[in-house]
Image (cartoon, rainbow, N blue to C red; front, side, top):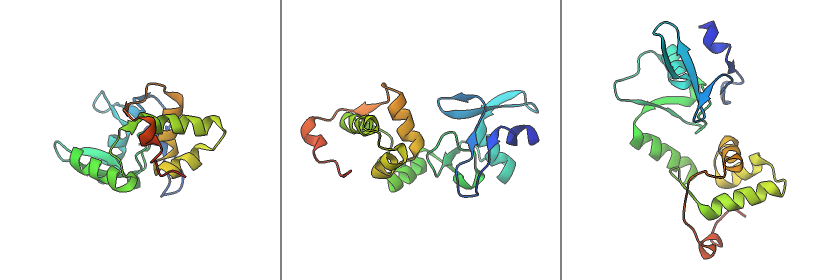
Length: 153
């Protein structure tokens, strides 16, 4: 489907292929003209490449980048496998402590590159970008004493 792939920034096979068109909650959105339905671009990419998606399955990102549609980064799973996969790579499921968010924003304000911050926290630079841009990015409470125990330096 040329129309679909024209909206993708295709790079190397191991790199994220970023969706360039419309997004919702950071997920690429694509109008499938065959069905007349809008669907997430990563699910469409998976189906184009691998075929049918099992009923009730999620299409998960190995890279944790919602805007990525690289079929090499996608797999079928459920909420449990997705959370376990994320936690295995990053040591976290999805929520951040308020102190971690503060530290990420502080490091960014000191002109430390988002890629370097991402390596410290073992997440993608896309996640760091969202945290820096969105003051309401979700968090769990953390006090200043807990903040001292972060292993980022």
